[in-house]
Image 1 (cartoon, rainbow, N blue to C red):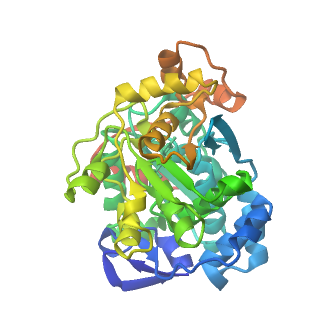
Image 2: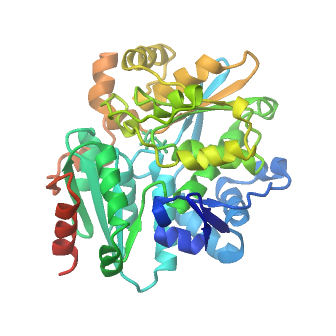
Length: 429
Ligand SMILES: *Cc1c(COP(=O)(O)O)cnc(C)c1O
C-alpha cells in the first residue's frame, strides 16, 4: 500500500511506515494513492467474516504483509461477533459493540495493536492517544501488558461517562492516563503538538492510536462488508448506511469500502450539535466552533481529523458527493429518537439514535437502511436510564471496571506539562 500525505504530496510512505508514524509532515494525514476495486463482491460476501476480512485487508494493504500472517492477525483481533438486527420494516442496526470494551473502537484498536506488535519487534514504542470516550478503552485493552509498549491516554476530565473512563483508567501497568482540564479538541491538539516534538518522538518512540492511524481505518472497512453479507440478498441493491460521526474515521472507512466496490447507494455521516461538517457541506466554509458537551460525548469533536480523507475521495469523484449526506441532530431530538427506538423494542444509546435519525431524514422509500450501533447502551447507562426512564443491566466487564479505582493523573491542557509528565513516567521505566 502506497500512501500520500494529504498536506504534502512529496511525502509518500508504505503501510508499515504510515502505521509507525501515524501523522505525516505538517500534521497531514496519510491516504492510499491507489484504491482499486475488488473483483467479485458477491463471492466475497459469501465468505465467513474472518476469511473475507483477510481478503479485504490483503487487497488494501498489498504484499507488505504475507497473507497467512494477516489471517492470524485478523483471527486474533476480530475475536468477537458483528450482529445485524432488524429494527423496523426496512431498517437494520449494525451492532459493533460486542468486543471487550463494548464499542466499535475495538475493531481498529485491536487490529492496530497487531500491526504495531509486528512492525516494532523489539523496539520500544509509546502510543499516545486522545480519547473522546471509547478509543481510550479500546486501545488500552488492546495493548495492555504487551511487551515494549507504553500507552499514554489523554481524556477530557468530566466529559466522558464513568463507564467509559473506568474501562481504561483502572488498568495500570503499561497504561498511563491523564485527565485533561479541557475538551477533546484540546487533548487532540496536545497529541498533535507532541508529534511535532522531535525530542519526545525519538526518546519515546512515539506513535499515535487515534483514527488518524491508517491501521484502524482499514480494519473498520471489514464490518461494512459484513453488514451487507448479513442482509438478505434481495435487499443488497439499494443500501443506505448512516454512521454517527465525530472524528469522521468510521464514515471514512465506509467510503473506502464503497470505493473498492461495496455497493453503498447513499452514505450519511450524522453528527450531534458539533456540526462543523454539516455546516461545511452546506456552505463550503470550514468554521469550527467551540466544542459543546452532548449526550453522545464520543462525538464531541469540532475539528474532525479524518475529514481531509473523506474530502479527498469526494473531490476526486471516487465517491459521488450527491450520495453523501451530513446532518446535525440536536440534543432534544436525540433524546426523543432514543424513545422512538425504544418504542420499537430496541434500546439504543445516544450515538446510535443519532445514526437512526440521520438515516430517516434522507432515506428513499425503497432503500434498505443500516444505521450503526457504535456502543453498548450500558456504556451510557446514566443518560439512557434518564431518557428512557427505565433500568438497564450492566454487563460484567463494565461492572468490574466500575468497582476499581481510577489511576489517572490530572493535567492542564498545556504541552509543557504533558511533556514533563511523560518524561517523568516513561524515561525511568
Ligand atoms: C468514536 C465514536 C463515534 C465517532 O466515530 P468517528 O470515527 O470518530 O467519527 C461514534 N460513536 C461512538 C460510541 C464512538 O465511540
